Length: 80
Image (cartoon, rainbow, N blue to C red; front, side, top):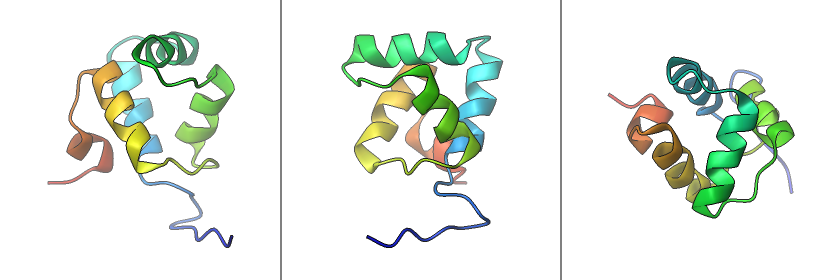
């Protein structure tokens, strides 16, 4: 499968995930733990790769990130 990049990133939500994680004063490990408690089995390394844009984020994962960070999916996508 060919992966297309936008601005040299595999996702557009990673920078916002980092922004909201840092605003919540959470570490990547704490976010990974919160995601696991919600039912999404991601590690700290996967969170890091998401934030740096080197990992594709499936759409269903956005609901887990949004719940863990207490924001909307639109916030994670940078939608107006």
